[in-house]
Image (cartoon, rainbow, N blue to C red; front, side, top):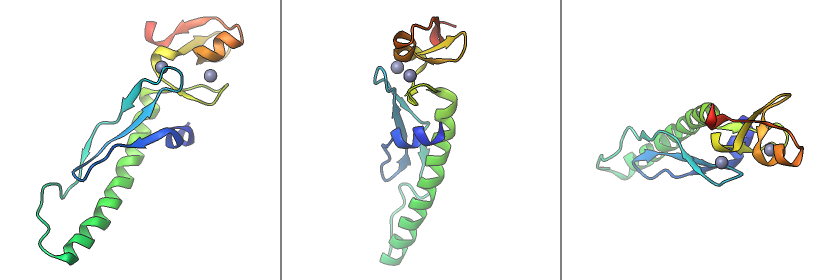
Length: 118
Ligand SMILES: [Zn+2]
Ligand SMILES: [Zn+2]
C-alpha cells in the first residue's frame, strides 16, 4: 500500500509548509495530509550561505513530512487488493471474502457494505 500511495501522492507544499494529497482512484476525491510547517518558515535569509543551508534543511524536512503523509494516508485511505488502487471510504467495500473497491466489487459481482456506511 505504501508504494501505491507514494505513486499517487502529489506534492502541494510551498515554501512555508509541507502538504501532500492523494486522489481516490475511483471518484477522484482529494485527501490532503495535515500540513507541517517548515521550521524556518517566515525567516529572512541573511546570506547566500544560509540560503543554501535552509534549502538543504527544507529538502530534509520535506522528506520527513512526505513519510508522515504516507503513514497518515494509510490510516485514512484504503487499498484495493484487486486493482491495487488507493480509494476513499466512500468507494471501498467490506465484502465477505476480501475487502475491495466498488468498481472491482461490481465487476466481480461481490456484495458488501460501504466503509462509509459502517
Ligand atoms: Zn472515492
Ligand atoms: Zn479495485
